[in-house]
Length: 488
Image (cartoon, rainbow, N blue to C red; front, side):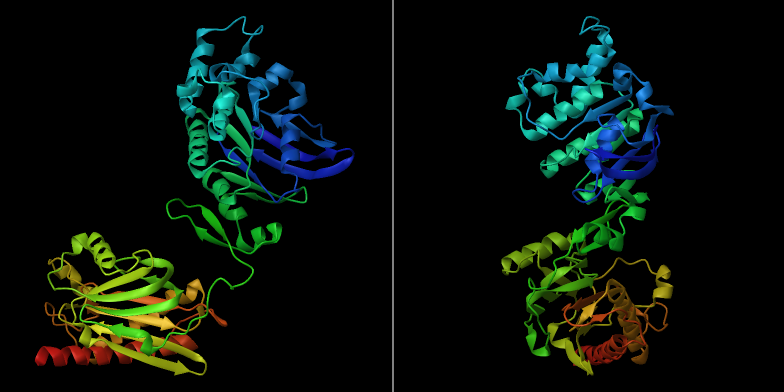
């Protein structure tokens, strides 16, 4: 649909855009990224024909844009600049109707039923029909932007050029506008080229991205090919981290501060734990980075309160989240900063131990009831419903882990727990084979994220050795406590 070949140019003899080449297929959205002064707006003006390039060419459907007259080009391409205040009063309907001008033989002298239908459809698709008889100047910025997009859609062009269509808009308006544009692309084959300041929005809504640096193409391709941590950090001169979007296969970024002054350093000690009849608690002064399979706040996050709560063996696990939140609120805990695990084991069976090697220290907490022990390789033979978890393991590391190390720490801890069950000859009551876990075990790895970075946590690493030994010994001790209680 659009081809930009070796395009260069700028203002007053100054070269701003340099040798830019890219192609956009019909029915696709291209997002143009780059820091301030990288040439984004200049490039868009050259594509639209507002600025003539010093070299290179712009083709629409394989024809140079200079071969189109004004009305022909308007039928092929619509341009939406950054939102500016309207210079004259206009009703919304009239503003949208201006988009039909390229299709008239005279100024509205040939207004047709088709024109009327397209205008009404453009207003409907952008959600501005209700403002049809309102003046533009009385609309909010987001409403005005939707009107101008409706005007561009009424132009019925095949190519839409946008200069920061969501700039200064709140997230609700951003979503409305970009969802609407995406729908037009998918349903009607519209092709869109848009400048974005927000890298995350560009990644979410665009099919390809063009990253400019100093007027030149630094990268062009799919979002996951362009939004690379080191590349974005280098171009924007900012510390960032990339992560996957939780619902769609697109990368997202988050800004990182230049220092860690926002977080107070904390060291976890065994004496920090408190035990009541209802739960084992750890409360820290600064949030820890956590990965867990808890019943509340599972996954990866930052938390400062940890509860291992004892519940009855017949606890209703199918309403666990609502009940747990109610419990936290009633006991003055913050649900958003508290990780909660459940166990059928009495809190007096808890085992908490500290393990050190050189300057590295970890603290491990285990509750290990084995009444519901299972052999994971034989669970297909069982039909009973899940029970409340009876082996819960917490591993707290006074150190800084990478994401790889967090995952490897979970693997290492799980292997050590399984070895402890084998050591204690814990068996699956159905199959008679050595158990590997209980019905619904939970595991938590938490780190203070201070000090030298620990890249890996496999069995032969320094931290892996501590986790392997520590989880094994603590689990064995917890199992023995549980057995003593059962036999008393």
